[in-house]
Amino acid sequence: MTLRDITALAGCRGVVAVQEHVWGAGSEIVPASVLLVSAKRGGILVGAYDGDALAGFVWSMPGWRDGAPTHWSHMLGVVQAARGTGLGERLKLAQRDRVLAQGVDLIEWTFDPLQAPNAHLNFSRLGCVATTYLADAYGAMPGPLHRGTPTDRLIAEWRLGTPHVERRLAAARAGASALVARSADVRDAPRAIATETAGEWIAAGPVDAALDVRRVTVAIPPRFTDMQERARDLAGAWRLATREAFAAYFAREYRVVDFFLDREKGGGEYLLDNLELRT
Image (cartoon, rainbow, N blue to C red; front, top):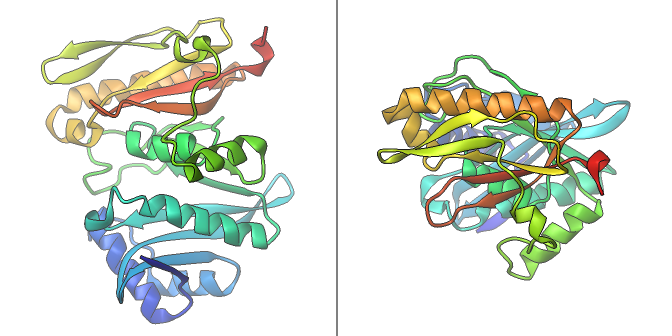
């Protein structure tokens, strides 16, 4: 794949086609005209090309947070045939290079916290952190990725030049799938959500919102997109359980610092850390 900036109308129309492929023609598509204006006025629109065919893209818009310049990364899309190749990560790294060249050191975006592959990329590979949870951020949306449960989102904060990010990127360049936990209590942190088997699915149990330790984990199930289609009650219960857990611990100054992907079954666990409880 060749990565290059998209700055012409034809390329922006290609991005529209990829949006329709990834999210469905009935979803909320960003039109080519808006993409073009953004790309000409500080936005970053990078495409991945397999020959002349657009296989993926990443798009962010410049903005401000607390008086400092930022980028808001609104979309990252990769066509089905190119998934599992690391292309999404390559696009994010290209975006990082271009944002740093603008003198900006923070990129933010939202993602569904129940989608394990996205969580793995954002936290394990890129080194994001998260401190904000949005309940039903976008309201009801069409498409298989959104249908069946509220559109709750975490805001990923990618602070581009921090040691935390640099360590993650160095591990990725060295071929590691994730950093090795530096102490046993990281991987043995207590669970905020109990889990139980429900036929072919994993169900969410009670939430413990009162753990008083430095580190806790928040589990998410495998195959959440399938669960929304085939076991909607279980999917809804997971949405409410994770919403309760994240809201409770964020209110107590915890933040998400990592994600442990279950490569065999799917799903995984978020690691939340509270520096104020460091012993």
